[in-house]
Image (cartoon, rainbow, N blue to C red; front, side, top):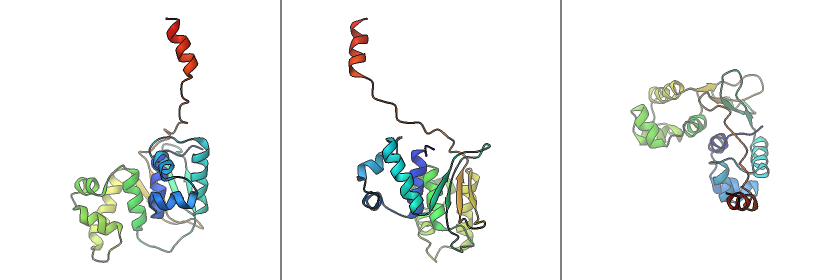
Length: 180
C-alpha cells in the first residue's frame, strides 16, 4: 500500500512531531522526511516511514467505496471531544496553513492556533464552529470504537499515490536524439 505524501505529513502532525524529531527517531535525514511529505518517495524510505508510524500507534487505511484516506489511532485515550491533534492533522490534510484555515473559516489565525494548542481560553462554541467548518470540507472525525482510538478520514484525498517515476535512461535519450 502506497500512502500519499500528504497523509504522511498529516500523520506526523497528528503525532505532534517536527520533521527534525521524526528524522532523528526514524533514522532518516530531515531532507528525506521533507521529500517524502511532498512527493512520492523511494520504496525504502516510504516503507520505513509507514513502519515508523505503525510503531507509534497509527494505521493508514486506503480509500474504499468512495471514501478517502484514513488515519486511525490504535488506542482510545478517553477524549469525548475531537482532540486538537486531529484538528491540526485535518488542517494539514486539507493543505491549509493556520492562517488560510482561519481566513476560510472567518476566524483569526490566533484563534486557530489556540484551538490547535488546546488552550482553555478558547470557548467551546468556537472550537465546535471550527470542527464543523472542517467537516464541511469533507473531513470526518470518527469516534473511538472498540479497541481502536480516534480516526480521521479525508474524503477529498483519494488514491493518487504513485511510485516515483524512474529517471530516464541517459543512453536511451542520446540514442533517440541521434536517430532523429
